[in-house]
Image 1: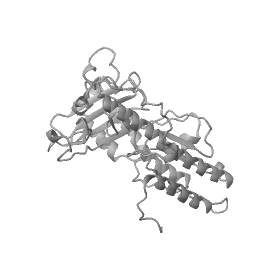
Image 2: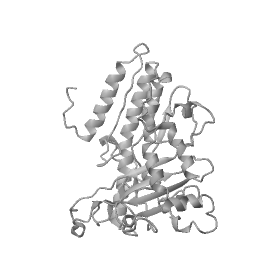
Image 3: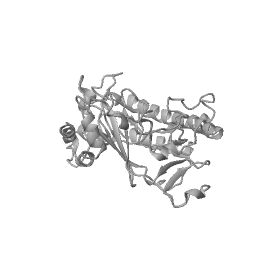
Image 4: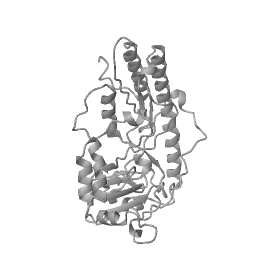
Length: 350
């Protein structure tokens, strides 16, 4: 494209994405055949710069004070426990500013989505088009006293919005089944009536979206490989310590051994909704276990309490996983399995 290499500032980039989407959709019609369009916006990514017309919106809003906001992350990996608690006042102010600006940037995304829907409607394509809206990661703003980032194993960092509209999808319906980003490509291929390669790890969501009373039973594997730098500007104490993403108070959001794998048992028959995580890449593998039914905010790491009353269910499995009698086998299976075959993980857990 002729303007492909121009270095647009953020506001012009938003306009450019919207313009290119409009130009592409203008070429489509009920006679032109199937099409696929992907729009990937910088919002609400740093530097959180809103369009000028939205710069004053949400002036009275602040970051949500969730149950995990500005509390100490006890019983968690050392990186979480190193956060300052309570958070300094300037950190709280920065968090609230970021929250407002992230919302402001998303108003431009709203405009773009509205434009796409309006064009599809005008061209009589809206009732025969699937529209997916999602994100690549979550975000925290003060949870467990961590200022702002996205690299932790907790639900606030790995849960994302996921909304779909399209043919045969009941308006206003909600699905309570585990899905992940790796399921998107197989879904798009099935919609296009194209074969799904066996190399794809995900599973098409089309049946889930268009069939009533259908639930999936696939567990979810979460992984992160920690970043690190030799030097952190303003934090000389962390030289060659494997740290990264540190704020002005030297509270760091990532490190070399913030490398983790999590196994979420959501949707597996006869098993509670639990998340078992291994923080690795050091000499002391740290384990965290959360009951996502009773403790959706992951306030209490229960890995050391599985011998007490109330934890009878799946106790042997958790013990084996904690001691890594099964963990490497299970995690390796989750890395290698493809599509429906991932459901066979159930056989490894019982």
